[in-house]
Length: 287
Length: 248
Figure 1 (cartoon, each protein chain N blue to C red):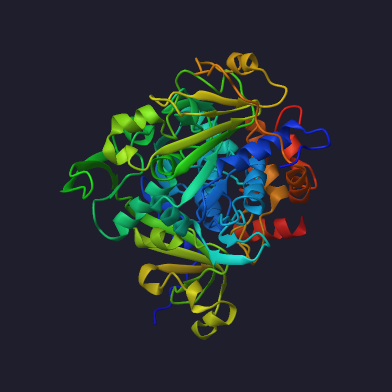
Figure 2 (figure 1 turned 135 degrees about the vertical axis):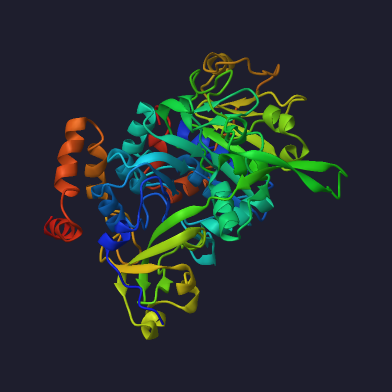
């Protein structure tokens, strides 16, 4: 089996200006924050970020990495509106493609299955379709069995990703990854929709040990879909990574308060972004 | 039903009005979002709709005793929504006479004056399963002639989008801190269904930024029974429901 172990720096080294990057997790839950922090410190820019958005989107917007966000929401969960993302949207500094949460899943699925779109009822009648030229409709080639008429449906376009970044609880060196929490979210689809996928995890374990902490049902991302794996303990901090740890709510409140003014942001940034991942984790631990 | 013997507070009336939204729903997912909606949904299941399926707020279906019944991660929830086996109660920053709802943004969605939640699941919910709304702050800035962004689809927009849009579309009730409203009109224009105790029809008309359909006789929203008040105390001993409506 291949050995795909790598580092946060090497993963970020694979990223280029203008790429479309999918980020796993959901809201402020199991985000690959070690990679996001490293990306914030890098020189990469003009990114299109595809995410069930949380502080990943907020941080990348606040550090000027983002040209466009593809989103259905950007939320910190316990703080419903992501304040850094709001600042960027209200200042007009990032473009958007807004989607329904389910359309988002269909877009990733279409990319994974290598088809240009998937048909759905979702979006009909709403401004997702009416006010965004990127989302179009299609006439069903089949007559409805009940009405006899052909239906107009939304053609959700494939969300093709250059790179996917996801965080899992465990993985092996070959890039088989395991989630132990209540929800996989759409991390598997993110990997399948991407040309290259990188997994960070709390702990890299021997392949023989993958079934020690969870049943085979938790092994949802196989090495077929991954190109690199990085051990980043506490790497989802300050988002939740159940059952390894919950969200650091006090830290998140401080992060959100950093959106209140340019001065507050400069202070937060210098305290928590202008240091490497080891330094960050030591500082978090020492409180 | 018995008449309550103690003073009933507005939040309790709202919880009962939410519970009533689910009457007759049977074995579907009741997905009420918000403090009062959640309590109202649980109240319905504990009293007159025992077959309702509800989540633990995350990835599990749990029964009335808190036992896990099934795993329902987000991906499975979309299967539920798109099958129609669900009644959701959502919030809204704006809602119009035909039930178009907005919680995405105020102003131009391309460069919003205020960025709000985004579309979340509103387009898919409204086009696939039964939807009701909970508005804890009934006022003319929420009940508007036209919403800035259509996230949840109203009757007129569904009709304009064609047969695939109307097929499973169905808005049922709008419950607010003042009243219950519905769309049971030939053209599905919002109608005053009942006013909460202590609220007049004129109070609701004044708090609504468009012309409501007001029947000649407007009943008063029903009071909780003693049994329901006891259940509400059991479901919400800390009184979180009183924090969600002005004046409790």
